[in-house]
Image (tube, rainbow, N blue to C red; front, side, top):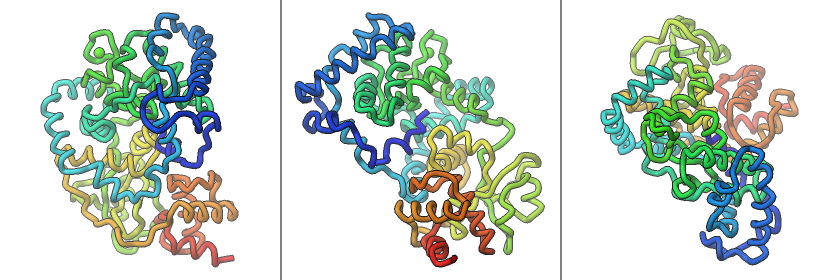
Length: 407
Ligand code: CA
């Protein structure tokens, strides 16, 4: 699981001064200053007792850190960069659900058809969802990352980026090496420690990765079967409901009351909500309306499975990309409604101001972090309902203006 997009892009996070100043630009650990190397070595040595307590042998420990003499200053630099938050959902979808990716995914679906059938039978997660995750995470295994995981995690852990999170992940990574699933040389991934074709952090690997091809190793780097089954196992473990879709694009009837945005799928059908592809809504299951671009854009009915996808990477855009890519791989058409690409949007500071204003009114209990997620959506809906305006849950400059100017 990544679930890190929200963590890693918060460019405001301060690193310890000693590590922030360490080393010169570039990927070469050996470019680090003698002080940085000494500090790094001391950090690794201090890790040893905790690793031993987890059953990591001296041999595994030594092999894991062989040739790593200092932090990766390139990774430290990345922690200070601003990420993609605030990027419009439609921009994200263009990149994540491209024609090329759909074609590559369909070719993989044909190539791996038998394996995918077995995975569906065992885990109850549709092949298209599994393939879509695989596509978004690593472009079907083509871009799982080439950064050595142990060094990446050690760099982030020593810098105390996100507190002790990466120290815990580093210990989990050592446990994986001890179990022999992968060698240190092949344990690679992103700069933030997300590994292989599925971009699992080590703790998620330990909890969810499976050996599906039966060779005795959970190999999310080299085995397509293991990678795909690990995705399915992860989703099933987090509560994927085989009886439900992730959601649908829908068309609302004129005058639809957005204040009643959650209910049973048959109720939505009775209220005149139609799938945009013309097919019938299922006759059971609970869903909520989701308007990621507001009333002027595509409208979706999403189920609890959407939240399961979202748990993998806590971003609405990500979850929508996976769901929509899955549909496209299965042959569904592009979204029917256009996105409001020209409409004014709130920037991060604007979202923070809105969160603060809603918080003062007792409608928002989360952090004023500038992230537009489900909590903010709920708060905006409550405010819109109180104001008697259409409750699409979408944060806009006009809504912030209204909030500022109303008592
Ligand atoms: Ca295997």
